[in-house]
Image (cartoon, rainbow, N blue to C red):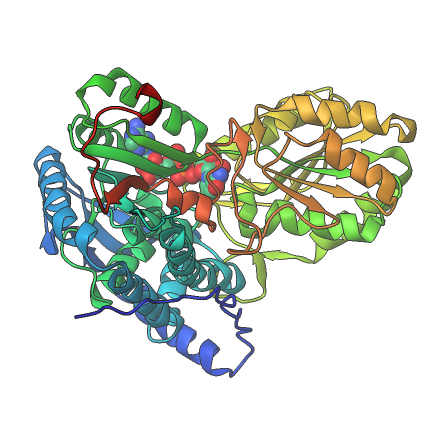
Length: 541
Ligand code: NAD
């Protein structure tokens, strides 16, 4: 019998390892990279704890060397999606009633396995399958994934602890029930940590999931699934379903037991799912919870009092690390005339020094973009800029897909603040700059505020604190994660809970208690010690 009251104090963030030459972590990672790149593994569906091989398969390749096959994965059909719904609903009975501290212990064990035994495995899978260099893999698939587990246990403890008042005549309590149904977790390719958390945040609160991983992140996501199982996650709590999003979404959303979506990906996909839910609303047992973090058109706004080298560093890292494929990546920048020459020189100098190529060559700052469709989309923006009279390429603008999907870090300069690449999400290593007159700071900030439908991240650079604070006010609704004198990427769990508003999502802040609260449906229970036996009130007598 476990009648302990558990406390899970806020943890420290998982330290980012350095991977210096000959360090134990570097040796372990190199061994794992070698192993994973010299084997072709077969990836099944995992439904109710069972591996399912449908025979309808596709390849997992390295984006930086697309003829190199890493794995063959099996795709779910209609029958398997239904099986997964049944498995999730069966597991719901056990999991939702399980002592929450036991659920938390499985989360904490998963974090520990990722921090130790499987750190090299998950990082290597993310590097090879999603083309991240060591540092980008370490901060994502190791550190952020681990942080999500540990912080969620702590946030859950806070939620469960929050109880209504009682007195001598009555006892009140709040039961934080799991939602009455399964959660459809639909994950993007770009963060292994997000894929994990889209499942594990609802799971921490007693829910079960159908997990539709992105087809371009299957390798790392499959490893996550195996680690969840090794940590003791009961069968059917998470059901791993690679395959067509449209098919899986359609069947999952047609079930009366559909309880909610936990989504991260593009605005277009989330809108499609939301519309489908709207159409089927009357068929569900409960109003489904729709939680989605979507695209961004993230900005850097430079005040004339800023320091050019700091701006150039933030712009370069914020726009080009992981090939600009972070939802938070800087993709438009507003620079005052007086600072442009210096910012441009610093950035051009960085661009001439960085190397691009395979993740296994550790000198490479830039690796490949995720797949051919993404490559072609990014190239279309570059070509559009090359042909436009309103834009010029400052550096970059080259690309090559013969071996891997490589696009050089590209800086576009435009004279039109509404130029296509100032407004639309590109999701690649492309930053567009608009130069404004130094005496038009606040007029330009208004343009920044109203240019794009998104409001995910944004930075303001400047040393004039009064003006910087005014910009912070002016841009209140322009970003859900706002930075002062820092790049607009790199949010850390427990420090900068993440999410944006407007077209960037429901802003339920992954990495914070606001997210976990969406996965419970509280029941208030009042017990009266001595029940009344009169129907009349005193004043009536
Ligand atoms: P995507 O929308 O193409 O895909 C996301 C997931 O949805 C994938 O698993 C995909 O297979 C699935 N999907 C596609 N169509 C579907 C449908 N009709 N029904 C059900 N599922 C469907 O996004 P992506 O290319 O994987 O990721 C990039 C996008 O994600 C960018 O827009 C980026 O800004 C966004 N993103 C946002 C955040 C955030 O926190 N705001 C974080 C990471 C990525």
